Amino acid sequence: MQVLRITLTTLLVICAVIVTALVARRELIVARTPDQPLAPDLILSDSLWQVISEYQTASGPRSAPVKLVEFYDYECPFCGDFQPVLDTIRAKYPDEVTVIYRHYPLSYHTGAYDAAIAAECAEKQGAFKALHNLLFAHQTQLSGSVNWGSLARKAGIPDAMRFRSCVAEKLPTPKIDADTMAAHLLGVEGIPTLVINGGSKVARIAVEKANVGAEAYESHQFLATW
Image (tube, rainbow, N blue to C red):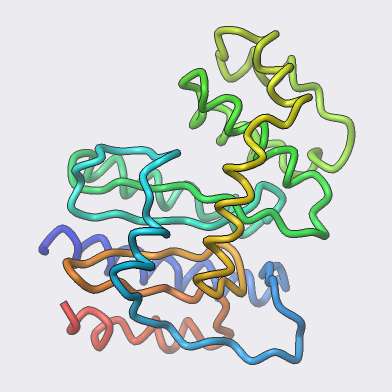
């Protein structure tokens, strides 16, 4: 539980800083219409947590006591800014924390779905994280014509021909669609959205809060539930 508390505290503070900056820059990416109210943070049922946290594409050990499930898409600038936060947490707690990656490509990000397909094709060859990082590094170019062969080489994907075929045939479509369905079950309204487990309790961190800098996600009250 100590690792969980430290991880949550770190995330909450960093989220507060990043979200406040992005609100000022008007770069928050939301999946709802402007007139829809934000849903409050919530506690998930055990059955829903099992669906959300299914171990598929992930960084970290399956047995890690702390699991962070991230919903994102590759053209979301906030998601790109947030990746180093997760990488820092993973590096500090390599055995205690696992990040589970779930795609939620928004319809108006025209290259996000194909990028998610490519990431899962890379996963089939053990190169997910390398391509994941490259896709975020090139996120402003994903809506155009993408040279998948070049990205495959840069990511160190062993069989580039197999990778290109996988992307062209959109073989991981069921995985992307399952991730999107999980996001809908959760009621994801903005990306990135994190789901963090804590024993028998799970809480979603809503990232789109204009006054997050002042509230800091009410971290003391939030952490007191563990």
